[in-house]
Image (cartoon, rainbow over all chains, first blue to last red):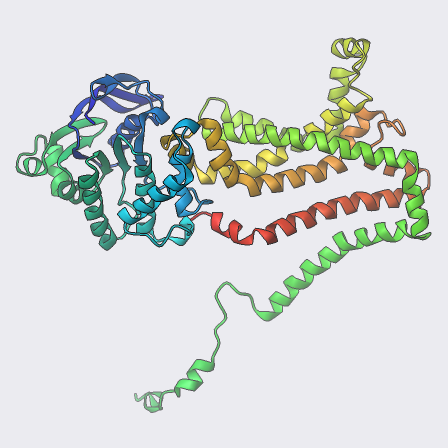
Length: 239
Length: 299
């Protein structure tokens, strides 16, 4: 799905989290929102997912105005920073949650739910863990379960907030490839937030560098490396 | 200078392994024994002894006398009234408490600190003052109370007043238990459920409620114990009409003042037994769901 951000601004009381920013994200792209903490990247992601509403500006999905669309209607697969798995449910129930939450007429039958969850567990390469609880999983496994749960609703886009933030270096590398593969098989427009420039440069087709609630530069990783547009970008990618 | 110890052989491995070091957070055996003695002594003197005395006094003239005193219509009416008041006040406060905790932890708004203070108010106000306030508000001398009495719905010296007083006094228990738990859990699980398409009500039933159910249970048990045992506020609003508005604690006091010690302590025994029953219920639930309780702790 093609996403357009048109002059979106957001303030929380007296503090401005986002100055008006505009950005076009082509369908099927893997995009990184890169910036230090407080740069407004997570706020922008949450606005796209419908978890916050902008103070001004519009969000367009495939050219249609989606600014006031509710979070449920958006069908954005969202992976949270700490994964936010439902701790009292098994992995199976976590992944099935979105399917069971559907209105009765579009809810798949139990056998179909089981088939889909099993398929997703195979996709994240953890077919054995359906009966476990989140507290019994490693950090890397939790992240993949969160990804499977987001994919279960057949989302129109995938939004990830610091998906590798809480993992150690080796697992992080492994899961980067995992995300790339899942993106390539599903073809979903995927946007992830990160403060790690290596991660953004290695994984993304398009990198959006942000600072202080503004977009500093948008470009392919190699272009940003070769021609940083502002002193901030130069300093940030060299750090 | 030559240090002779340098030439001594090292200790044999077995000798080295036998020395046991005390963990840094552990006290010396003497201090430990002292602390245990203080804790157990305090428990025996302050909790177990009074409880034992209650039952001993109740059965002073035999079990038959105790049962007989409880079978009197006035005693039965007091027990029924107390159970009825708890059965109304506890669910009401469970709903109020969940709503208050939800508002405080899931939303940011002006006056939040004031609301938290307001929830605690019943803890700091004397129950007698609370009872008097209800009398002033709803008594037959007040404008509102006069109208209510005239329309055949008296609050003071009747069941509604006793319920109101109990609700006021036990208001903070559920909210106080829930707020820290809900703050600690944050909003992200609810947000995740919303992004997966769940409605607000479904999120509450399938995500929020399971996560707070243990805190809710503790809050409800505490609330129940206090609602059944409340004396001060209820004494003021009930009018202490025997067989009508006298709850168990009030009946106990009246019987005791009339030197009917078997009757007074029998009823006190029933009240204590009800409290012990709730404790037992809590322990059984914890024991039956121990694995689930461990799994739902923060991961």
